[in-house]
Length: 141
Image (cartoon, rainbow, N blue to C red; front, side, top):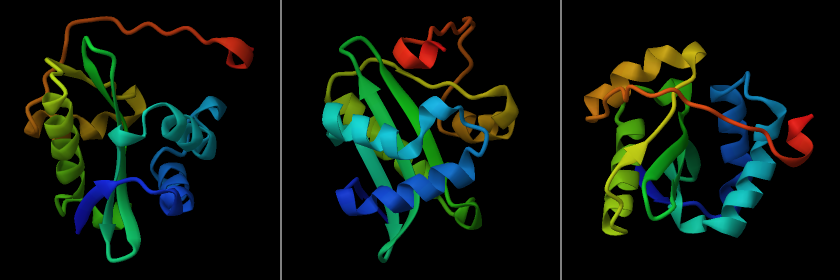
């Protein structure tokens, strides 16, 4: 298994992975649209974990000059507990740190609470904050 930057040939496999791992994602998180936006905006912070030609994991990150974010960290269910997710997160941490990022945030949906132990094992802690969001454009519905 290795972690490398996303390449366009990975698009369909990553989309299938996200549909599998995040079956209740809202329509605004259409995998192909997310991939296109990420590749247009910030392609260097998008990684896949591969085993041969198979994509077994994926992760997105962002950095705005103030703090970094992790998004859509996903591992093929049949490959969990093999270090795939940890390798993806550690790659993201290393690359964000190299950019001068002082802090990384992530959000875990309440429905996905079983992953909290995974993130805690990688040094993440719960921030005592309330997360707000606002839909924009066509997503505001």
